[in-house]
Length: 301
Ligand SMILES: [Zn+2]
Image (tube, rainbow, N blue to C red; front, top):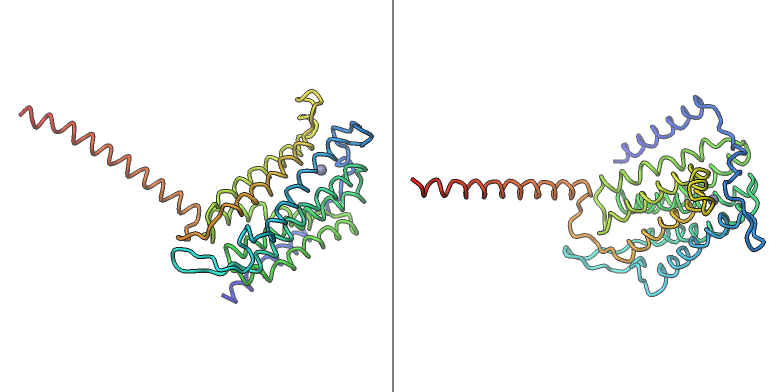
């Protein structure tokens, strides 16, 4: 097992170094700061892009309060009963979710600050909290799906990797490490959500969250077309903020609803089982109808 972990790390490091050697640096384009909707309302410049960050504060604070108040999410090392005995909820999960909700709440401040005066120096504060939230999620996923101890140990290094990728961009004007930190979880999280057996029920909420994140990314890319399409009511970037805020909403709902699962089946396995059941049902209906059709023939003889 240790050998495998070392191998995985080795391959990852080699891939990273190769990518950094082969690909050219990606500087931050200044066009990025030129948003479609730059209207000023109530004296606030770029008003809708600033105000639309408010939901992050609401969800972040609610999540954080529920993490600690009355143990609503059952994350505080409590004994959780399930059909096959009891498991102890993990301290690492509480830390992971705490960093996640702090990151989400901080996005409201960082992103508002950036959109008030969009340039590279303010963009750092937009990206920093987002990256903390993002990397915490990866650690939570490792705790839940791979190994609780490794996941807990990975919280600090993962968050650090995210912060370093932003510092690297800041000092060398090269976005490649930041792009990798963003891209790898986008592939790894949905894949792990489908393929690896969960510890808890309500796994599909991860996919809902990933779906909203994807929509947010599309809206971000279509900032100007959406602004034109809606006759200058709302821009793609404002919608991006609102849709991205749905990600922590779904994850909070999942935390509130989930239970320790009795049978550890991956989503793919449970989809396969229900598909096989549906197929079997289809077959039995066919058999039934063929039996009925045979009965009158027998009677007519
Ligand atoms: Zn933004």
